[in-house]
Amino acid sequence: MPCHAIISDEAIKDIFAFGNFKAYIQPHGNPCGAERCGATHSQSSKSIFIDWKEGEQSLLQHCCIHNVYCKMHDGTKKVIYHRITIHPNHRKNGLVKKLHYRSEKAYKELGFDTISLLAIKDGVIAWHRLGFAFDQIADEQRIFREFRQYYKDIKSGTGFEFKSLSEVQTHDFFDNQCSFTDWLAAKGIASISMSIRIKP
Amino acid sequence: MSHPTPILKIMFDDVVEFEAIVSEDVKHFRVLKDLMNYEPMIKELITQGHTKNILSKEEEIVFEDGSVYKKPIYDQQHISISSLSELETFLTTNGFACIVDTALQRAFTVIADGQDIGFGGNIISPSDRSILMQSAASLYKVANSSSYDPIISEEASSYKLDVSDADINPEPVQFLKRIVQDLSTSTFSQELYANDDRYKKSIEIIRETFRVKHLDSLRFDIDGESYMVKRDAIAFIRRSVASWMNSSKVSIEVKDPKAFNDEHEFSFKVYLPEALTVKTSQSLYKKALRYKSKTMKITGSYISAKTIYADSIALL
Image (cartoon, rainbow over all chains, first blue to last red; front, top):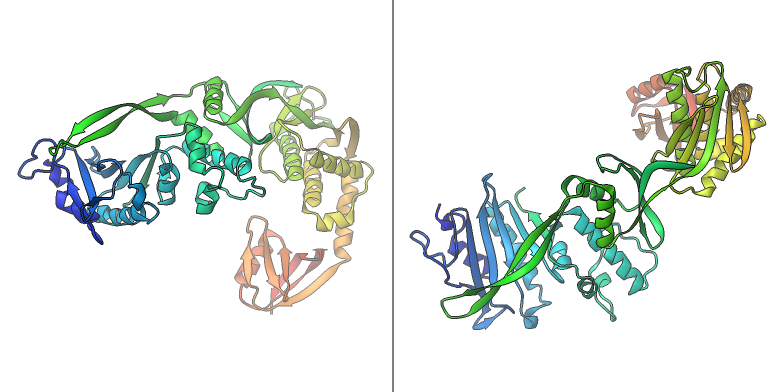
């Protein structure tokens, strides 16, 4: 199977093209069949690097967005977000949120079943709030437990009533002294597997 | 009293939030307490282990324009958990305060006595044995308002059961003590029976235990004191409840009963306009279901201000 059969470059570019934003696929690797997909590829996956720009200005901090699109042995299709780091100048504009909701809708229409990622640093909370579930219950329990400790120690919180991370509001993760993501980083918690099922 | 069975406890802020008896090979476990839904995690760790992603290196990818992307490469490290010590180590190294404890605390002891209520040599019948064990567990659960079973151990005597737990809350123990103290002197509080569900259920459990044919007495050892509840005390309570219920007769007409529920306990609610719970027998409950949304006449007795026991239900 040529890798463009999993997803075409054009379909990927369309996802990132909204407002004044545009995607540029970084040419890399060998041509794939008739289409130069610009990616390392195999018969079952397509790895692609994207620069995302507003005009001439890149929206990214580290080079590119790296996504992998896979067709699994059981016939299901999966997107893996390997890297997406928005430049600090463009953060807090809900850019990732808009992109993710747009991606989720598009990948669903393109027949993908799940999106997965390894969340690092503040991504652990950010992706969870975008609907990603922890792949392992132990990770979720640990993060929630750390949040309880953070709430108690840093926010001097009394009357902790949250039953899970999903119930926690954005402002609860912040404090002048230390944000919860800084707290997690100090504990050495990183690289948490998460995924979201997009196929109903 | 020490038990060989280890109990895993997970704490947060010095509060024990999870307790489970776990076998050394972690193939079997029974949860005794779970305040923060730890059970699915324990189950996952035992059955699937845990996979960690560890950043091992960065691979340089050079694009055609000469720019370089440093791709992080993660190694997956899988940890299998096949023993209690491995489970404890995993939890501890992952930020969960936990200990494995083998010491149990005894809440109370029940000694049943009667012609064939003897332990050893298969004297006690399996069904009577089961009733006594269930009663002891139920008394503990009702007093603690908990759905988790305590640890019951049998000892040779007339028929002795020790009811133990990893941590004992003194309030429920004192509550039970008060009940058996009342019953040992053939008294009980009508007011509490009518208004305190825990009190009523506990009395009912003890009453039901005397279904065991040759059971003459139950001795409760609680908090260093002994209380003997005899069959005739139970008969006295049965008569007291019956006469009290008969003296508080009620007859009501209800138009369009709004809700039927709780099939297990055979009770439903009516509104007059305040909600009243109607408890009844299985057959009358089924009859009430047939009359749903129609005007019905209920006669019975008040069990409490908000609860009646219906002994007849008719369609008007």
